[in-house]
Length: 246
Image (cartoon, rainbow, N blue to C red; front, side):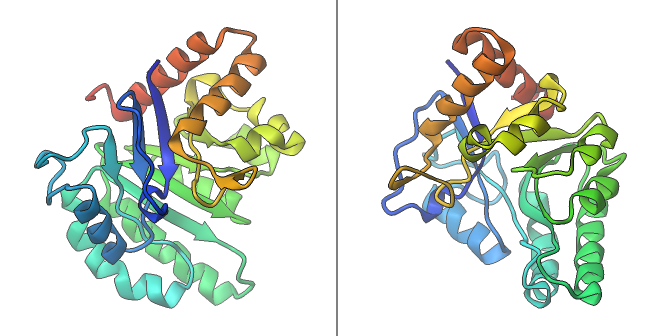
């Protein structure tokens, strides 16, 4: 069974857990320095094709978290400098926890710059806390693959979103009645899986890539299929998000 965790902060685990070779993990970072450190940790040189003993199922994504916005703006040049080194981008997006309209506008300008710099080869994982409508609006027509991570609504945004968007689901969403209603509005051909570990916990431990299987089990129940078929469907969705190149 091939599985995929499209949003995990794997490098932040202590210790870093072993990952089954049949599980692909997108390692999220929040700034260029963390991207560099994570690539060093997993033995990945500049350029995705240059791997010296690095596990082939680990993909480190270049991130630039929207908060605090001043730090985001300061790190943008370094982010753009590293962008040619990877097709995987995240965690990026908008975060409207701030009530400052000026800060929100500055976040949108940074995200617009990132989207303009990315192309059809890029696979993005996006944060959209309290900023769903603006995030989805900015992604309309994006030529690459954009994945909405841990999307929390509202439902009208799902219904009006670009049909090309992907949605990544985690165990917290599978436990939430509100999230389940949103999931039922999502195109099954655009659903992917994630853990957001170590920020999501299962019992007294952080969610790890192996826990993607829990999301698969949830989807199997939702889709009224066997877990193996649900896993195949998600893997096919992932291959489509990659453009069939992996």
